[in-house]
Length: 172
Image 1 (cartoon, one colour):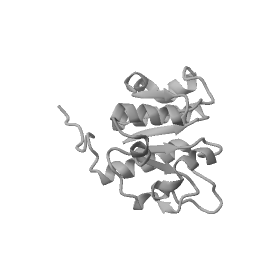
Image 2: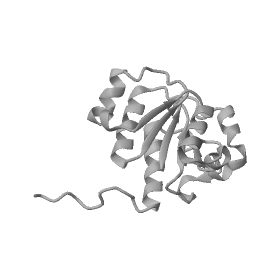
Image 3: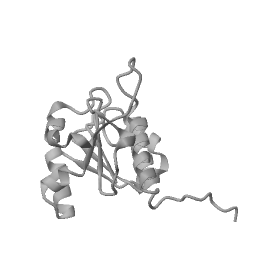
Image 4: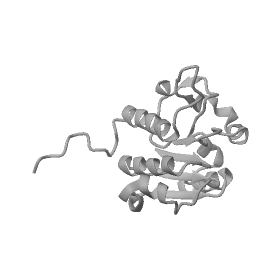
């Protein structure tokens, strides 16, 4: 699985997600222009010493990201699009009911606005891959880093935590 953040706005959230991506062996993509510099001290502080291990790539636009994936994976744009899982409050499907696959790209929106209509429109024909995390009626959404963690770990759980250390470290 891979994580994609669309125009993230809060450096510590992205830093936490960088750390999460390293700890899970998951590639991370930033799509569009983030609202901060990737040199931001808060971003690096949240990412700790994991920053150097990160498989982070930045793409100027969703179109550039789709083209990158198409060329990298030798697939058509439609084949690439079908691998996307969008997390949005507009979804009808609960994230735990989704059947995850190792080749999926988990796409998350901005902290303040989620995924814009223009991005959701690119995937309008794939609403079976639109997921939501249940929250109380008093809450619009969870923190971005928490949302990424919740959805990613559910996917990894379903797949048997591939590549992750399942046993505690030995004392020796």
